[in-house]
Length: 126
Image (cartoon, rainbow, N blue to C red):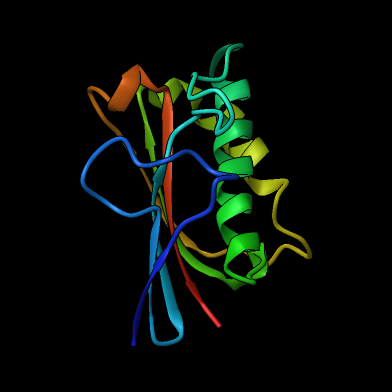
């Protein structure tokens, strides 16, 4: 079983990809950057504002799929600068309860879509 995930509460794709795909009991959400769904504009205020918007975009996809942050089993974080790791890590961590965190890697990259400072993709299982 394969199902495409779409919600207008998260940014629309800016290329030939889906916001997410469900395959059986596993959901794969495309990387989220700090685009605001209602305006299509990037969140302003630096890496902290962008990290918060990214997590809110992920939350919108989770909600649309009947999932919660506790259903996330794997994340990948892409950073423009590893110097931003502590700030992004603090915001990211605040979205998970009871210290139950998914597996994760964090990678510094030379450039992200729309010159974002952070992008996060997630995989969920329920």
